[in-house]
Length: 235
Image 1: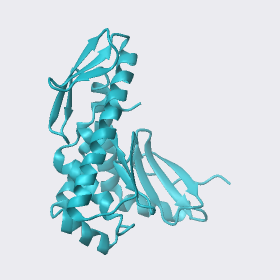
Image 2: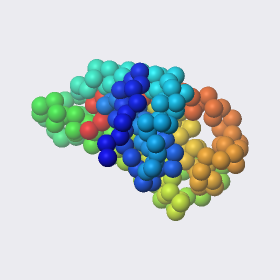
Image 3: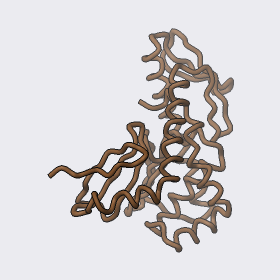
């Protein structure tokens, strides 16, 4: 049976999910995605929910559009890398040699191939840099606030800055290197707090406020943090 989709000011894609318990909205580059539980009456109950969330939808779609514009403008090979989480600025130079670096002068050397190959080489450098630096930053915060974790991994996730599993494993996004120090630190502390509270309950936020008194301001700023990440980073 085909759903009758109520007309709304913004076009949207409707998905039904057996796992969903409530209606979920997600702003993407393809537009608004609406996920509803099995058995949900779309024709009767969806439009009031969309209307009540109109302001959020408008802002979320606007952020996605602005992000796409920024990424399109920064997809080419850069000449500088601003790794704000580390307080470092690296120059990018193409050379005959393979991927390498001169740490003393903060220069990254990438091979003289076509731009796509050069960008791929730069991504590999960035990933190795993140694998060295992000665990170090997390360990410092864990020791400072007496958190105990099991494993730290670094990945290139597209939509999340980090995650924490029930086994105490913490995954961090290499893109964190581009964020200002207060935001990268907020993400680290956020995931560490999940080691004690695996949800977003009042107890979780109480723990987060203990280690990061400015967490509300940082959380709000993090929503716009994509602007710090160059478009070439994403594969």
